[in-house]
Structure formats: C-alpha cells, structure tokens
Amino acid sequence: MDYEIIQINENTWRIEDSGVRFFLLAGEKQALLIDSGMMVHNAKEIAGSLTDLPVSLLNTHADRDHIGSNEEFEKFYMHPDEEAVYRRSQKPGVIIPVKEGDVIDLGERILEIIALPGHTPGSIAILDKQNRVLISGDPIQRHGRIFMFGSHRNMQDYIASLEKLEERIAEFDEIWPSHADIPIDTDTIRLLHDGALDILAQKVQGQLQEVHGNKIMAYDLGFCTMLCDQ
Image (cartoon, rainbow, N blue to C red; front, side):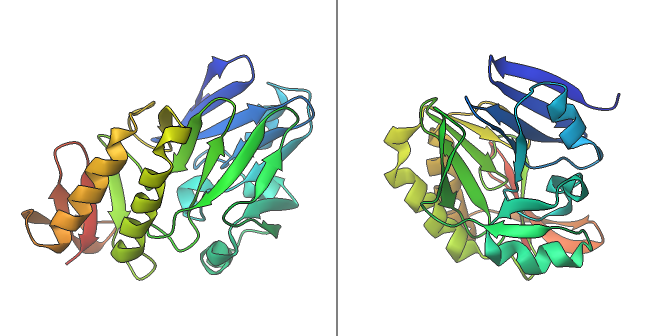
C-alpha cells in the first residue's frame, strides 16, 4: 500500500498519497471525498472501506495531483472555472458546479464552499462549520511550495482571495491544506498575503529554478516557498 490512512476523528479521515493528501468527511446521511489523490486510482474504494454511507466527490481544483481517482465517479462537484483545465486531463465525468456560498449538507455536518481564485481560476476551500476547520486545497500552505507560475495562475486574484479569508478568520480555528504541514494556524493567511505583496513589490529575492521543465522564480518566504513566473 503506497498511501496512508490517518483518522482525524470519528467521522473524518485524511489519506496521504505521495506528497498530496485528500480527505473523507462523513455526516449522518452521506460522506464526501475532498479530492481523489494523485497516485491512487481507488479513492472511492478506500472511502468504502471507512464508511458505509454513500460517497460523493468534490475537487478543490483540477490540477492532476488532485484528480487521480476521478474516473471512479460518474459525476462530482467542482467550480465551473476549473472545467477547461480538467478536460485537458482527458478524464471523464459530469461536473456538478459549485460556487461561492454554496452549501453541501452531509447530515448534521454543513460544508460551505469558499471560492479562492488565484492558484487556479476555480480553486475552492471548504469550511466545515461545526468543526471550525477550513480545508484549503493548495492556496494555503506552511513549509510547502505554492505554484503560482503558468497562464492559469493570477497573483492579484490570489491576494484578493487571501483578503477574503482574513475577513472570515473568526469562523475557523485551524486549516487543513492539501500539502505540507497539517494542521496549520490561521495566521498563515496573513503571512501569505504579506509575502505575496512583497513579491510583487520586489522586496523578496527570488532564485531561478526549473520545475517540471519550466524556468521559474522561487521566493523563499521563510515559512513556505512561492513559485512564480520569471
């Protein structure tokens, strides 16, 4: 088995899969996978080993390390602004669109969708209201690398998304990202916001690197690294 299942509490699990993680959240009536992994292609089977409830899928965004098992599902939740990237993956499935403010009720467990464009146009976070947890996808990380290079990334949108989260920071106590440290403190949002502004203002020294064949600038912010276009 090349993945690890970690139970967070009686109705929540995280699955660690080759540097990325995805989550299973169960309510009273149904369960929800948040992303479907990278190397695994049996996320639905994994979920079925943990709960007897019917399982749906929601993708935080369409980068390839988050959609590894999407072919197991005929339909899944995703922000419509991710569809173009998703279709390039040649994976099948019907997208059920979700947008800012939409709610998924698992039965005594309410999840609210928060749109976080910037890392990708349709990136979303999920606010687990009763548990006061923000499941953030890729935009919020501590001691990880945030990809902000390429045509579908937008730093100005990213900064605006962080500002929106700062306005809602009283609604959650911790953040569960898809990469690197977990859980992380809510002050990470402010640190990322200030770091992104410093990058735009050229207050941070970047280093030229190559990532996946792309020449990029890596900005070490001390608590994470942001990878941007040259």
